[in-house]
Figure 1 (cartoon, rainbow, N blue to C red):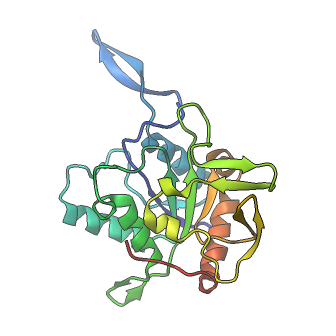
Figure 2 (tube, helix red, strand yellow):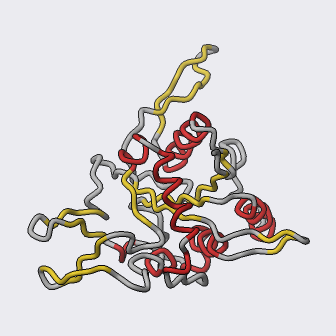
Figure 3 (cartoon, helix red, strand yellow):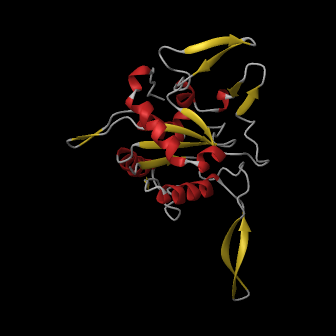
Length: 231
């Protein structure tokens, strides 16, 4: 069954693996292809293609619909409409997703995640809480280790959650009845420990619908988690 998917991301973040993106440009009256810097936006283009292949529907802004020059109220209204119409929110995790010089409440990703987690009313219609996926992009070196590392001794992966926005962190490892053990000075969780689960780009590309449907399963079991919906 196709799902309607909203993607939250930092448009201009270029601290991601190169995708060999080219765009047409005019050079001495000839149109040539010029390589450009890969940004998170180009990963959204790839996601859009994958969603269409699996009969899902992308509900975010289009490539020619950048909202950077619009007033905040206009952006909020347009994005709110698209999130309201979606059932899944994919948040792109990347090294440059946060602006360290702005408060989190003044950046769009936390607002979009907060809106996604809430049940909203539009007229006589009420939206459900969205399933949310933290989709981890590889960095410039093609590595995920800025966020995901492997603890061989504990046979588990470790997430560098301090790099995330607080509202994303708050909805990880938030299951009410955790299955966990102590190893190497910290807790190791098993099973579905987080409402927002972290997925590597390479894994998602291999089977997008698997992770989309998993987020729906978690949404349908949302009462098992301590959801924190405010920025």
